[in-house]
Image (tube, rainbow over all chains, first blue to last red; front, side):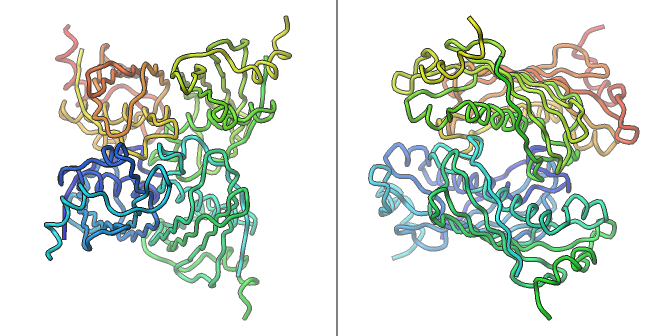
Length: 136
Length: 136
Length: 136
Length: 136
């Protein structure tokens, strides 16, 4: 398993008139979690696209346990629990400032060759970086 | 079952550099589907909040079958398949201009008393409007 | 002068915890005003990009006179007051449901050749459609 | 003058199909600049609202000099150049990773008493923190 923690500050832009983070805005928090998890590993999603591979989302699942509030510093824990092949699944846990688990999520993406627009295997450089986390 | 169709035009604001609608923006499309489904039934979510009941989201699930593209006129089919009690589940199907099913989603919300901040039963006026769709 | 009216319904997604439309979300309302103004004229921005011309924004100015509220049906009046050349300026007035002017805006865009990435003249088909509105 | 620098990473969510940051998303970058400028000074906007004062936006002006691109680490320089009274003006300069000035902005906000919903003077604690930056 590969796991990474990242923090995001809730912006006024993210809230709605209920005074909570709008339910659609967690997807961008997940994105930040994924991207920073990869960056820490030694890879940027920007480079991945520059090398001709993009990662569109296939599925997204969210559970809203308690609201996230304006200006809170949220901790996003991003996990890759299974070695990716053509698809990669990220799992997310979000804790608020007082340490409560307020949200869980799961996003499944697919590696796509940007030229053929067809699914492809995980790029070699990414596989090289991830393999050590998944035993033999 | 209660079902309603509504159309939304994809804005430039909704797209990302992949040239697709960003995966987090479907949540707002679902919102539009829910709100217009209720309005056609004879109830606005605005009135619901004014009467002291809000509906935060508990769960959201999305499947991205094919991308939605800029300026497409999407058709959102919103269904309530089970009679709501303290919770209400909306299901969504999104078809693009050429009639292809490109996306499905499901959102579960809970009725919350805005004063006590605790779950409550579906408001009577809403129950009155929905009951005819769910047999005896 | 060319002028066009279009309506948008304020989504929950557009509001913030002040209970108003977030100040950054008016830009997408302007976008809708521009795009529908062009569509009514007989041209879509999608076609423009497909023909190799894009229109990035150079300047944007907004005055917030009174807040826009959730679920209000806003009327966006989009005006082109001067015949465009390499640049085009759209002016916006937004009225709420009770007819009050709550917002004004102005956006200046530039025609850019997508191949050379350099400014270019307004495309001929667009000029043809707009000329009748600007006398001789 | 009070000046503060803050960095934001461009998210995929912020881009549009032109491959640039969507023009409406700079407003949230400005917000981050303002909020972090105040936090560094010793005040949070959250506390301000909790004390009964909110700061709706009156005017916003943006100049787009060059596009901001996905994953760039932008530096937002936020300046308060005049001592605020009932209104406060923030000026912004945004530089990209290679140090180029790509964007300037200016946002004017007003202090509003949340109970009366009427404009009010800058709160005393904020005035106390800002005064040293504006001579006598």
